[in-house]
Amino acid sequence: MNLVTPSDFTRNLKEFGATLQAVKNILVVSAHWKTRGTYVTTSDPPKQIYDFYGFPPELYEIQYRPSGSPKLAEKIQNSLKTVNAQPTQEWGLDHGSWGVLCFLFQKANIPVLQLSLDTNLSPEKQYEIGKELRPLREEGTLILGSGNIVHNLQKADFYDMNATPTDWAIEFDEFIRQMLESRNDKEILDFQKKETSQRSQCLPRNIWNRFFTF
Image 1: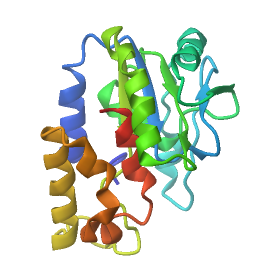
Image 2 (image 1 turned 90 degrees about the vertical axis):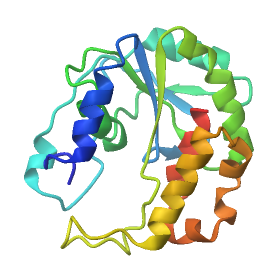
Image 3 (image 1 turned 180 degrees about the horizontal axis):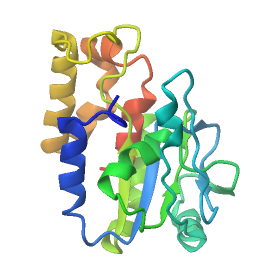
Image 4 (image 1 turned 45 degrees about the vertical axis):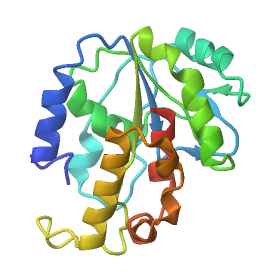
């Protein structure tokens, strides 16, 4: 478990976070906040949500408490034309958000908001939302899509954390990496046509949130 066990993954997150000196705000689209309709958090500070069950107690003791930004939330609402985004204080930062940010920005000194993932929208609509959010980057907002590219818990080996990855998992992960690096947005939007995607993703929303970051 990356949150409590040191790994190359978390070390790389820390190193990468140290390079992000210009970030003024963070907007997270987490695979763990799926909704009907689009919502943006307005709480300041946002509450930390432990949205997982049956794991070791030390996971529930991790605290990550950044501020929020109601002002940026309002700006996001006004920027989105594809959807009618609504403000909410019912949600906060789920583990798809704080579980990554606690390594990227360890001091928790940058305001964080979350944007929900409307599962009624097509990949193309989600992509359009990402385009409307793009100007925020020029103002110092980091847009972060959080969710495992390979996420099939039925096939995971929980007894061997160092188990060799399966061929289909490696193939799908490499496909997404290549499409991101080549900026082949159309191929990623059609990712479910890939045979390996069905094995790699029981939950397509883990890929959908990438569309907001292109």
